[in-house]
Amino acid sequence: MASPEFYDVIILGAGGAGLFCAGAAGARGRSVLVLDHAKTVAEKIRISGGGRCNFTNLHTTPKNFLSENPSFCISALKRYTQADFIALVNRHNIAWHEKTLGQLFCDGSSQQIIDMLLAECARAGAVIRLETKIAAVEKTETGFRVTTGEGALACTSLVVATGGLSIPKIGATGLAYDIARQFGIGVVEPRPALVPFTFDAGLKAELDGLAGVAVDATVACGKARFAEALLFTHKGLSGPAILQISSYWRPGEEIEVNLAPHTDVFAALKEARTAHPKQDVETALARALPKRLADRWCARAEVTGRLADISDARLRALGESTNRWRLTPAGTEGYRTAEVTAGGIDTRHLSSKTMEAKSVPGLYFIGEAVDVTGHLGGFNFQWAWSSGYVAAQNV
Image (cartoon, rainbow, N blue to C red; front, side, top):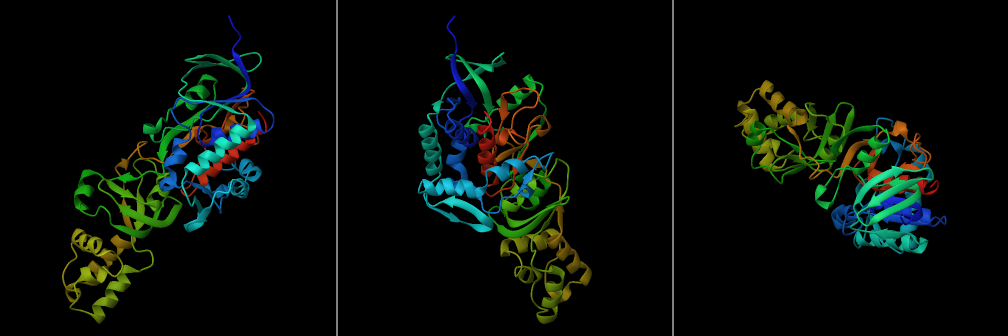
């Protein structure tokens, strides 16, 4: 039987983390092969940021990440920072701009970031093979044997960069979790994150017709709190504030929404009643909320008509429902629309300095597959770059 084709490093997954790791490992003189079952590389990069790729965030710190071990990400983020990635983008002459809250986007398209990663791989001699299905992974005396539909391969170091379960239409699978479990490595239960919420039938009926209405809001779940835009949808709630809090939410938990965070609505309504007693309460509330939402909110609270005819108690109830709307989402839209997967490879089983499995020398996990999940705004891509970099320095 012929000996399997050998590489120093085989990387499973041609997404952001895998490609970045391949280029960095190849630059150290390692022979590198990247395998992926998809027809194209880095599909998640291509569709991200409205097609312009929010490739990092100026304000990246460990506080922008969730994990059962919050300190795990510190080492990688320090060793390869947002400034390091920006410098790489600049070297490739990719024009970029900053949007709100330190989010960086390409001026052109996300394809520029993909082309940059492919150029780095080519320069380093890394080989990329697409439409290659992984049939089996085995540990050998000298490293690993990877069996594909086209035959067997061998390597000293194996890097798993196959991502999570989010957006299955672009090929997401649970391969990373399967490999981890095969080698006795723990997996924190995966769940959709950065994902819209859905309403139950009753609330959906109450708020029917509000799809497309957006407000600046503050949304809280437990100790987590985000102040960004909120969007009503046909199914429930979305927008940056909702996507952010969804990463912290668990089924059955209540969230609290302030639909008018810059206004004490009860005080504003009382003041309006004094100044304009004949004014309808809907008109007064529309100073703090979009008109369509104000009308529905008053009807829902059964507080309607002229301000002069409405008691303090009823105005207070309307104000409370606006400034402290408490609801329990029915669920989320799931992996179909989730931007990332929370949970994943248990970091207790990995070295934070190398991303290597503590119990399986030569086996590495990077990127979204790991139980490190960033906030919305470029942080998950930065984790891909940082975790890919530290693995590349050690394979």
